[in-house]
Image 1 (cartoon, rainbow, N blue to C red):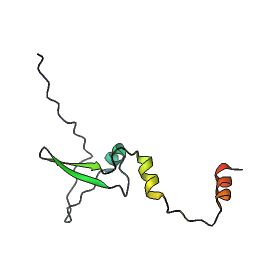
Image 2: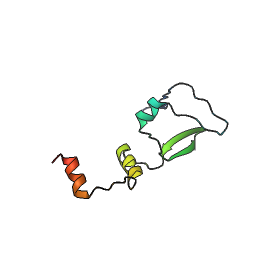
Image 3: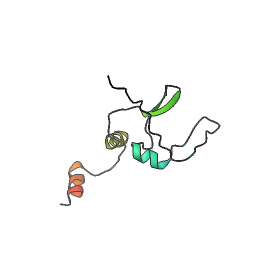
Image 4: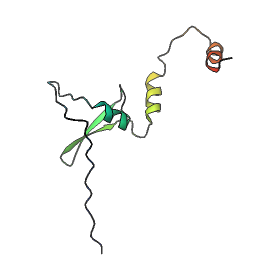
Length: 91
């Protein structure tokens, strides 16, 4: 029987962050981009093995799908659907 190697999580850091008086932290921009976090995302803070993890609440959805979901129903226009399609198609 071979001996199993213990795997350690990869630590990625964007530099030190400071907890504010409301218990909030800012996730560094490079890590937000790398892991697909965008403004307005809902996240869960999970306690696991004595550490806290920040995870997307809507697991499995792509960044694009989350953005479209947040934007759906927010646009306003006085143009008809046909006028919008002509504008988008360049006809």
